[in-house]
Length: 77
Image (cartoon, rainbow, N blue to C red):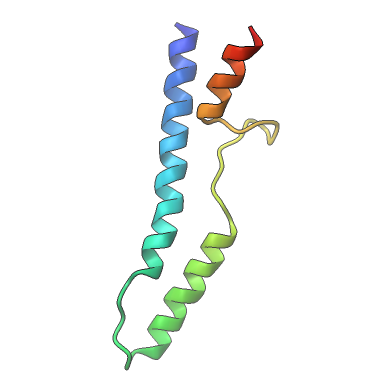
């Protein structure tokens, strides 16, 4: 039962991180009219700030909770 919980938690964490990091890239692909320079600069500045901080879900910053956690648990047995 615990292995299923660990699998589910790590899989959902990986999916969440993937979607959050993908959203940052999608913000850069927004087409804004050339006349709206202030809006374009605000979107670009926000996306660059977001891209600088990569989302990772950790356990007290000791290790990441993702699919790599499953493989490390499996190979340590």
